[in-house]
Image (tube, rainbow, N blue to C red):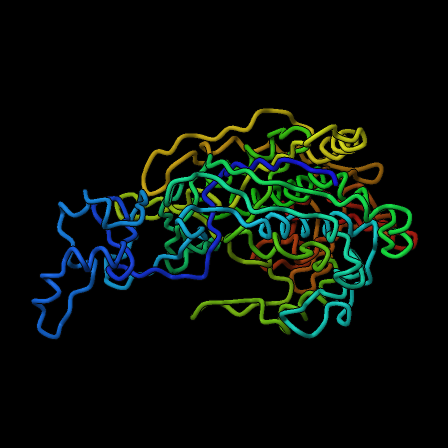
Length: 497
């Protein structure tokens, strides 16, 4: 067995639910800017006189508390900084997972699930599973199982991650310690959904656990039965692969929040994190509530075939639009919303932080294999060229506590426009192209200086993030993201911007 100590630090508020929804005045009470989880039996016992005096209309536990009662620790299991936005009785608060002594912990399954998603996404290009409607399946609950079998193994007994064991992570040892109340909302680029109140771990909470890799499953005798082959290095390179997956997601998330209303703080957090070198055997990951569709699926690989992806969105009813929202059109960006923590100032809620980002580090118990460090360095160099220390600002307003994202970082300057080309464009080049063909949100454009029999620009629907309808002859700013040869002609794939 290869054994590692797992160290985890939260970078933003983190919510992992236990399935319980707490209700105001039934389970918790609010005094000032603090929320108190009641010991209901103790409250009823202390307020027996009030209860006995009731004539059929029995008061709720929270309604029987007076101001001095909040100084009596025996009446409460624990307390949280922050308060729900709703003052109505029965207002809901989603509970964080805890042990029998009300101490929050992080399930090993949450961490292993995030690692599995990252390994699947990163290893896709190595295994090259066949992507079609049949391999995805027809059941929403088991969607993608055929693809997972191609990536990890044909059944649980032959699954690569049978060799990986992640323990639950233990942190603060006092009841409710490290928890705060977070006001969250589902955010689109132009609006926010209904408020959601969460018990969440504050930023900079620290937890410990263990990771073990069963090396006997890679022995020659096991290889003949299990057939893991060169996928052993998926575990050797696990942390670097996980960080590369997160880095790719953060690039898209930074762009998304830069285009959302009032979300500069969140965009700045992602830009800062993109510039952070985490070091060897470490990875930034997103777990829990708020990780989103892109953080829990095959993500970009499912979107490569636009027609197939639109069929999946329809078949599995993945697009959730509120009343009055426009119906989804083929090629519209997906997903259209993100979950974020909010700061409320003078009755106005603004996005303050993403949810669920953690820094995970593995420390070997014993000598670390040399290939681990070598492959980690190689993948980290590919994931991020800029090297700076992570920067997280201190909180400035309730209800969040612990470090919040820094003020918005200055956006990375885009390269200047190339007025004309004498050779094929390179990835990262920007130019102004003229539209010669439109199909929905798909655009094809002339590249300045090049004949369309040599190369043309192509903007796919997912890279055309605007509701504007273009027509032939319109000009569009393009940024090259890849090139592909179609016969004798080069298709220069671009994003708008």
